[in-house]
Length: 197
Picture 1 (tube, one colour):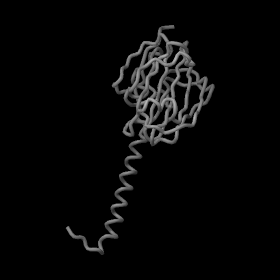
Picture 2 (tube, one colour):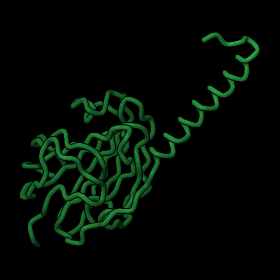
Picture 3 (tube, helix red, strand yellow):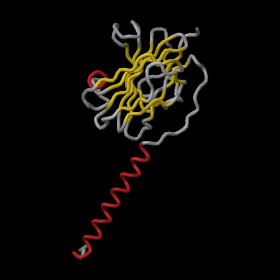
Picture 4 (cartoon, rainbow, N blue to C red):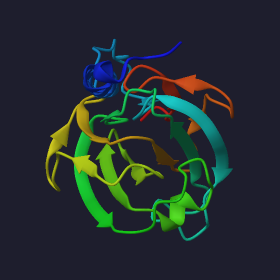
């Protein structure tokens, strides 16, 4: 089909407008923040993020939570909800931000080398750590709480922009309830169960 050259300025303006509209709709979709049904059992460790479980592995013996700690890694694609939630109710005892690289979030090396924010929450007689880890596209980690703040289980605490990863570290004696390949929802899905106090 031949296009009259006089029509191209109008066509190009409309095409640019269409691209801007699509980007606007996608950005709106990306930053959605749905309500979740939060499990009430205080022994449960909830997923801090939406995504896919890509690792369930032992953490190094020198991990801050001690020997026998388990690491659960969740990969968030650009289509997942990126709002992060607290895995347990408790008290924020540590927040440590580390600048770093921007490897793809599904790469195992991302846990060590990428921009990240580590958080420890203490409550229910134990401690849980989780890390917000930037991905290939993400360049901004948001964490809204500070040391000494209280958090509820499943409470919104921040987000990671545009593709990322969240690692959760559970102390020895925690019963793991997920496996590699499972999909989870932040604040709603149960990752593990802590022993009764």
